[in-house]
Image (cartoon, rainbow, N blue to C red; front, top):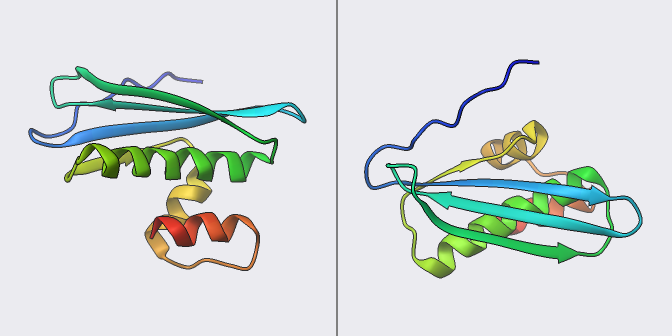
Length: 108
């Protein structure tokens, strides 16, 4: 597996990286890192939520990142995460009937 390096966002844009770590049946840790175009960390935030599955955890981390950006007044952002299904659902605006769809709907 090749490691990919982090790419700085364009000037005036904040890049928000999100992730979730699942401790099966115990807890889910959400993490958010916001960096500017020089790669300087602007904000780091973590949060623990109730146990859930991987997809819901990744969606919750994404929502947490977006909520944080909104609260801090970041207007131009790039959102980055490693959950392709979450990214594709947000981009397509096509949400289903699964419980995780409620999270996607609230991000749109």
